[in-house]
Every structure is written in C-alpha cells, then in structure tokens.
Length: 66
Image: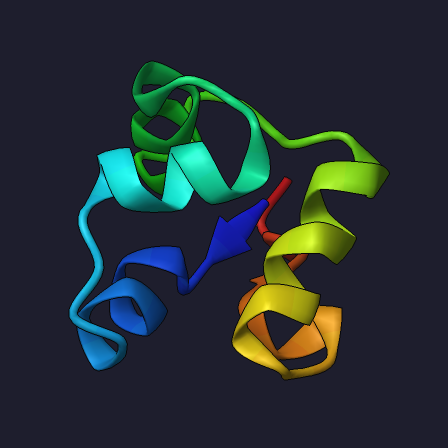
C-alpha cells in the first residue's frame, strides 16, 4: 500500500517520533509504514487520517501493481 505519511509529517513539521507518540505506536512502526514495509491496521490508518484532518484515501492508496 502506498502512503503519503512522510509528506504530511513534513507539512506539519513533525518527526516520526512525535507522530508515533500521538498515535501510541513506536517510531519503528511509523518508519516501516512510511517505507511501505508494513501496512497499518485500519484503526491506525484512520487515526493518522484524523490527526492530519484528511480522508484516509488522501494518505493511503492501493498499489495497483500488486
């Protein structure tokens, strides 16, 4: 799954650690999601979208090549 978390973090001047704390996950989890090595749970995906005040589809999209 593709994502724009890094873009949204930059727009909000936020580190991976700060985002992780707000979402109650580890920095390593955020890093893995950003590098597309790990897909977040639906709950975490919606919490990320809510935090940045955008629809979940704005941050996450399916990789059509799979």
